[in-house]
Image 1 (tube, rainbow, N blue to C red):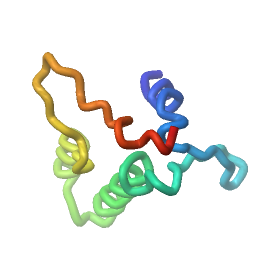
Image 2 (cartoon, rainbow, N blue to C red):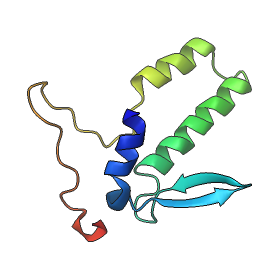
Image 3 (cartoon, rainbow, N blue to C red):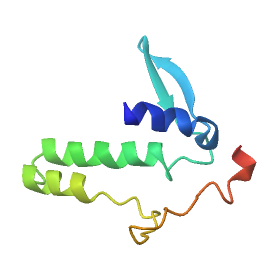
Length: 94
């Protein structure tokens, strides 16, 4: 359920579009967020699944990737601090 709430919470910020593909609902990120957020994550995941299926990587390498996935834009903060509010600078998307 947390995943559902995360999508709903970020609906306007990420400019998600909900459409249908082959009769099934699908979502995509907005033009300005492609490659930075959900779309980029899905592309990375698809690539790793394809590499696993093609036996280019082992199951262990795939599982390690899932545990350590880093899209390259998350800012590490001490545990007692909140992550950086990355809505700052994206006011145009709101």
